[in-house]
Structures are given as structure tokens and as C-alpha cells.
Length: 265
Length: 309
Image (tube, rainbow over all chains, first blue to last red; front, side, top):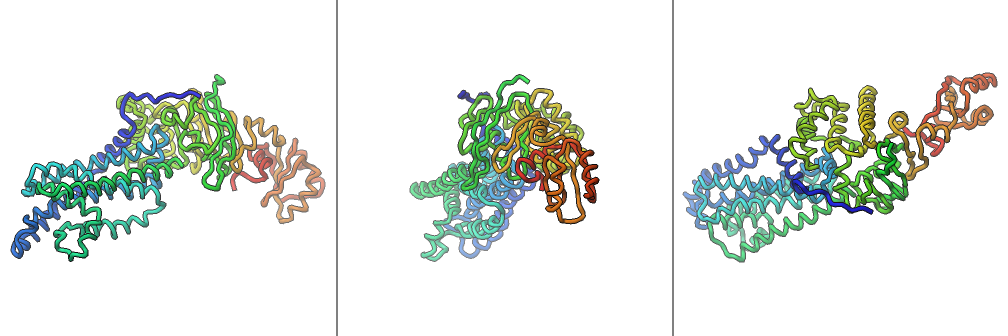
């Protein structure tokens, strides 16, 4: 039997899938800009400036920072988490079940792995771009205190992937979106509120602190704070990156299986 | 027809857990041919299509497409195929033109080529004046034409169509058939599944009849009819439900009698003559119809069931 190689003149296959997402976004971006750019700025203004005023009047600094400087990095982490989630649950189920875009794509030279790589690289692109804009905005609020803050877009990207990869994998296994609302209500929203986002871990009673450290978003929040302030222990940085990296990696491995099963089984 | 084998399948099997969707089918298709899979829903047509589209892998058996093995050369093979799935998979939020161009990008076609081909295919699908409309606003027939146009963006050598006209009104159907003839004239190999016998008779040079995951007959539509049925069929409807007793009496008039829930079919050479004999024998059906045999009769003969329930 003959064997032949696909001529590789132009783009690798995953990048064609990335391009699809980019063009799609270019056509439909208006709605999402509000949630990924304006909402965090609203939070920053309402909480950082408004609540920050009360905090300053009562207790002064939080962890040695003004309240606005304290919450600015954590809002980057919560925003990119929601971006990762928003790109993954409903859009992925639509692509495998309702609109069936991924089924159309596997009838072309693309393999399920290319579709996953294209998807996640697009999420990374959006998260990085959001991170750049957001870092510039909090810079204007004076919340950047170290050159390490320049890594904030990368941290945002890592957080987005840590959520997007497993959620893409999961969404490719379900038949209805019934569970998505539960995920949003009982995982995304509580994480947003309780990952030491709006107050330090020390505000929790001692027995709850280890529990907070089990929450995935906490590691993104802590990492973003470390970068913005420019100080933190190497071991805790490694720990945070490891948790987020592991979520991304396991998500990719699971996603390769679940998309393969869903699309070409 | 050049006679070059473009696709060859030997003892293909597809299992999903305990369920065997395709149970050892073999067939070969030549370049330029239009080849059909006729059978009722659940016969294994779509599973077969997914295998010959180099999308899903056979559980066992041998398959070669363009002389290549889809297990090892999936992307290369798919780059030379066009696939029209049973359900449209268009991007509803995007424009007609963008649907074509974005899909072409999956085949790594350069932008200038994409633009030229999109214009050409819009013309082919008679969608030029709708090029900038959102796909969501198109009718079912127009969406179907766009799906076919999209499948042609890479100039495929084989176009695979799964139930291409299901759900379309007769006018949209005929227009679509006409486009498919045109492609065939241009040398594109067509592979079509359908559960409409008229579609199979119209479009296919050769077809296989599938039932329960196996091939029960193969040949040109006319040959199948000649081989498995008689020249004409007399369809009789009775006002009573007592078909069973009638069947025995009617057997004397026909080569074969089929009793369906709503009618009795007499397989004969000369329908009008048979009908006269039936009346002369004092049997008076509520209505009677003489027609030529069709693939429907072939299917009934081979499986004991009708195609469309």
C-alpha cells in the first residue's frame, strides 16, 4: 500500500483551526469586550476606589498594600478564568452538537488534536491580549510595582488555559448544557468570590486556609499578586505554576481523548 | 469512464460497543462514477460514509482511497475529498462568503485562491446575490446548496453526499440534482447515500442496497430492477382488511404477491392484462394502479420491508 506525506507548504494544521477562531472572533467580538475588558475595570473602580476608601479609613493597608493595589492583580486572574470558561463550555458543546463546526473540521485534513490545539492556542491568544490591556489599565491606577508585573499577561494566559483545557475536554463529553449552569453557579462564582480575591487568606479562620489553597483559582490570584508586587518565595511560585500547569496538561490529555471519541469514534 | 479504481473496500466492519453498524461490506468505485448506497435509516449507510470519508476508522477490514490507507494517510486523503454531511454544519452567524473562505482555510488554500474559488462557487450554487447575508437567514434549500459549495472549495476528486436532499421541497431537490449532474460531467466521482429510490435511480450509475449493516444487492439501478423484480407492478387497495385470504386467490395472477398493511402488490409482466384478469375473476379492489417496477420493489423483494416507513 502506498504511503505519502501531506505536503507541508503553508500553515501547520492547528494554526488553521486557530485562524478559524480568530476570524470568527473578528466578526463577533463586540459582546465579549464588555465582559473581558469593561467589567474588570468596573470592579476595579467600584471596589478598588470605592471600597478601598472605606478600607483606608478603617484599617489602612491590606498585606502592606492599598486595597486597590491589593485587588487589581486578583481581578486579572478572575477575568482570565472567566474568559477560559466562557470560551470552553457552551462554544465547545455547540461545536460538537448544535452547530457541529468541529464535525465539519474533521472532514478536512484537520485531526481532533489539531482542533484542540487550535482552540486552546486561540484561548491563549485572547487571554494574553486581555492580560496586556488589563496590565496597562492597572498600571494607570498605579498598581504595578515591579518589572515582574510584565509577566502578568503570561500568568493570565496560564490561568485561562488551566480552566479552558479541562472544560473543553468535559464539554466534548456531554449531550446537554444542563450541567454548565451548575458549574458556573457552584464552581466559577464561588471561586471568584472566595479565592482570596477580595481579602487576604489571613481573613479566613486557620482551619479554612488549607481549603482555600485547594481552590484552583487561588493559585492564579496568588501568582498574579506575587508578580504585581515583585516579591514572593520561589517555592510558592513554583507551587502555583505547578497547579495551573497540571490543570492545563491534564485538560489537554483528557481533551484529546474526549474530542477524538466525540468526533471520529 | 477511465476504469481507474479510486476507492476500494474489503470486508469493512464498524462496531460501537456491542452494536455492529456495518457488518462486512465490500465494494469498489471507479473514478468518475456516481455510486450510491440505498437503504432505510439505520442500515449502516452513514457509518460506511464516515469510514470512506477517512473520518472514522474501520473496526476491521481493508480500505484504500486514492490507493492510500486512511489509517496512516487520513489528512492527505481528506484533503482530496469533499464531504456533504447529513445535517448542515454551517456557521450561522457568519456570511455566506465567509463560510466558504473560512472552510477553505482548513485546506491551507492561499487567500487569493480562496477569494477566486468562493466567487466561482457562489456562482455555481446560485448564491452570488446572497454572498454577504448571514447564513441563518437562508432557506433550507439555499443552506444545502451552500454546504455543497463549501465541500467543493478544495476541488475534491470525490464528493461524498449523505442524504443530500432529505427535507428539501421538490423544486430545491431538482435544482440540486442538476448541480450534481454538472459535477459528474466535470469528472467528479460522486458517492451518495439516500433512502429515496427515485434519487438513487436518477443519480447513480451503480449502487448497493444496504440493510442491517450488510450489502444485499449491487448493480446498476435498471439491472437491479430487471434482476430482482418484474417489469410491472399492479397495486391493489381493498376496502376490507381481509388481505390474507385475498393474497392466496391473487397468487394465481402474478409471479409474486406482496401483502403490505395498506395494499397488495402483484409482480407481473403486463399490468393491464393482469388487472383485467383480476376483475374478470370477480375480485373488485377499491382502487388499482399499474406502474413500472422501481428500486423500492427491489428493496422489498430483498428485505421484505419498505424503504421509507
